[in-house]
Length: 419
Image 1: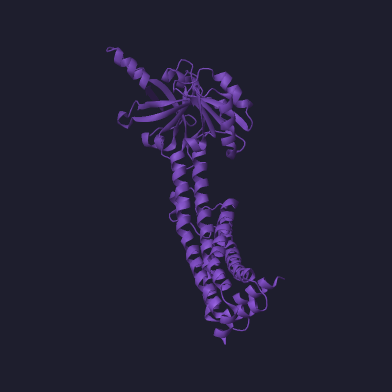
Image 2: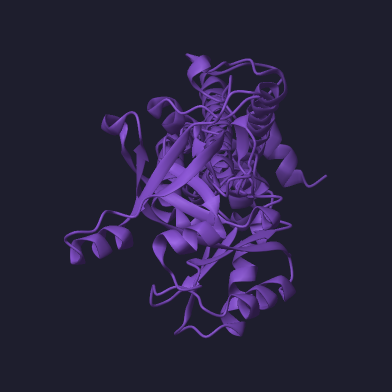
């Protein structure tokens, strides 16, 4: 073993006595351990909440969306679908029509709501169909040619709509779109053309989203908003959510940028995701102060070791040890403090994270109001590497000044003062 490393280890932990310097060094090492563990735990919790929110939003939002750059809708739907389905990692592609309309009830006009209507082709929504709370996701016309509609569960309960069950007939609602209202305004003696729908079911979003959204068939939405055969865009589902960026780049190369805009799931909710990432790294920066304070303690403790061991340092130099080797002794000592503190912090932090992940030792307060009953955690290897590297690097940097001071000691003066 390198003699410099042996000397550094002996200075750090002597078996003969426990001095004040050893206690201060232990406190510094404990500070590094607690700082690293706190960073690992907080980053994992932030990642867990990020994944939960992302999964909730992606349950209805697509992985990738292609829309018209001018906002006039997409006319050549078939060719766009073919290009999208030929793209690698794309498992499903479906057109949609979306717009706002007034939801009307015949017997409760006071509960009319402005909602978002999404027209879809149910046969193309195998992997993207919402989770049903009541009824079925059936948008086809019934025997009397009345098309179906599926409402958000919160919206349906607020309006008192009930899907049909057995012999019980389903409630019917009407939709009045902006184009229909504009046509009525041009004809003073006309009545607004309200399209009637039969409530087939109530869907639930896997989250606390109270968005007023309803589903109708694609053809009904095209008639409702009078799109002349156009669609609002194309929604894509991928085999891997993390491939959205690569799929977006591939489609941008194939499609005319002046005609089409490609957005990923991150782009659709960019402001929310950006805020969550900012909170994550902001909290990490604050907790990183624990490691920085521990690093300052390392400077003090190693400087005290240099003062205490100046006689030994002078003797080593008199025996032929160079200033570079003396400097390395204290760099090794700072590295040992950093390695032990960082390693113990990683073990403690990851242990707490996996304990929470598998045993849910910290439950959510008022868990009945949330979809999750305990704090979610998710470990990202990059976060662990960054935290470990930063903590270890700070400890090594903290040992630079004591190492330089030790190397500057004059052998004769050191031995004389020690005597």
